[in-house]
Length: 84
Image 1 (cartoon, helix red, strand yellow):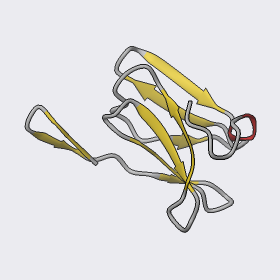
Image 2: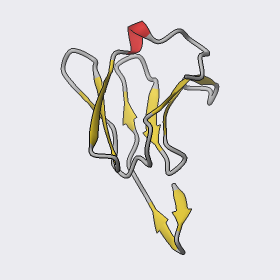
Image 3: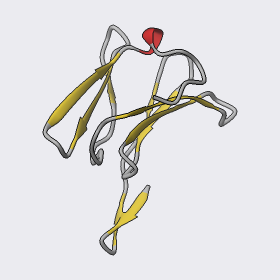
């Protein structure tokens, strides 16, 4: 959840098969948390992400940003604990 321009933005998280919680925020990142709330990784999308992440059948996370970009994030490629 984020607040921008006096309005509240709510986006649903996505939960991976391993219990990882993926969510976007108006800070321009896609975040991944393990079940205890610890940051697993976060990735800059280059723009405000005003959408909920979607997990494809192969485990790829899809996120759209306001800069007309669609990101396809493969979690196995991102190093655990990284902040890109």
